[in-house]
Length: 604
Image (cartoon, one colour):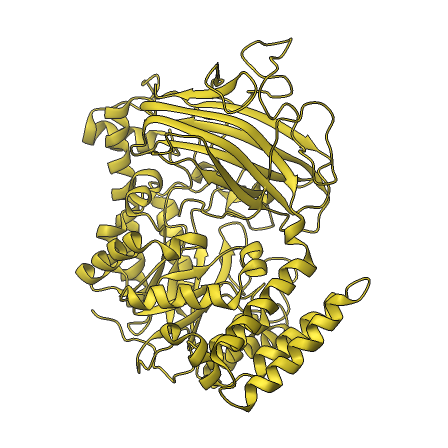
């Protein structure tokens, strides 16, 4: 997935000087007019300090003022960066004026306006990312923007804003970069928008039955709570939930007919739901049942720690006493809900957590090292000892009474990650005649790196088959489900997840079509084609990170459901339960997931 996690918004003007926090631009020299007195290759207040990146160039082709920033298509990674300190609480709008000239983005190319929310005293792995990709074809100046906001209650140290890119043809001009507080994303505004949306749809279809009157009564109460000074957000939210729960299936079907289904077989799923305690799991199961789901996809952690009682990996602190997984599986099955679950064996992090029994502590030689100091820490998929260990973990998971084992992070964590050790050196030397320890710039050599890409995705493909064989040997009835990066070319070339081929080893394929990807019908069609060819049940995701759940109206959810069904999907999986609006859950339970559909059987 192209992180694809677009969460918060920045807005920009040419204001230069002090930072303004009451809706003004938080970025200094957003118009890129003033050169730095210390380095004339940089605008004042901007830096270029991140390992291999070179600076952008100044250009007289501008939107306003006299100058803009320019990235040229020479295959060199370029960046200007600014740290915004004391940015307030957000949420924010990040934006810029963009113009392109003959821009072509090939494999591995990109041009991006990027924000990182960095929390005080927290590792970089806890950073919140938000970004917008610059696309070819904008031959006149256009504004691009993205919403962003904190996903943690921790104190924010700074927001790091970057203009960056690498491509082989054309030019990108950037001007008037802006980061502003987005008042339209206040709790009151967001909830009022959801209420107005539902009221508008009810007005459109009229009094379908008595449930409409009851719903409107609760919406009136929600509006009254928002009208108080200060707004009573808690009561308004509760009334909003009650309003949605009032509506009948007939009312939802009248408003959103394209989102409804009478299928007798369909995957109707949601990500996550296991709680640390019995009460926590029960609360999640109640919401899952309200949603009408027939299956869940649990997350168990990574190679650093897991939240089930493992004999192989450290148990996450706080999860040691209660056997949450055993309880959740039994309780879900009693409610007629299937349980799938995954852990992340090759997750990459810049701040590895070291708990007692950690493989990072016991086997440091298993982890990738290379010339890029910024390469994340991850177990090497090409190391036979690593593979043998993760297969034991999957065998352990197959011992639980789950309906399926999930694959996530069965891939390399970044486009240029590779372990530069003797194992990989000898493997690559024997197959391709390339000595990775002697090559001066392996990632920069397009011809050589294309062979490394093949090596990486063939390595990952073998592991997927091994996982399937291991799980089936332990329990022939346990199926395999995979979380997959949405864009097939990106998945293969940047993350070594060649699922156009390797999905033949999985029973259920779930592309992570978060945010607006779930509306991209071209991507959906390519995913469906691969799944049909490889006989994998196709269950695309809809939803995204917390800010999306916070903003999306029920009409937006209904639209995404309709698109997946029109695209021929075998089901839908919602990402994710933690911030899933109870009112939206009620909509799914009486609407798109109202029919009592059976979960699909494997096709192979």
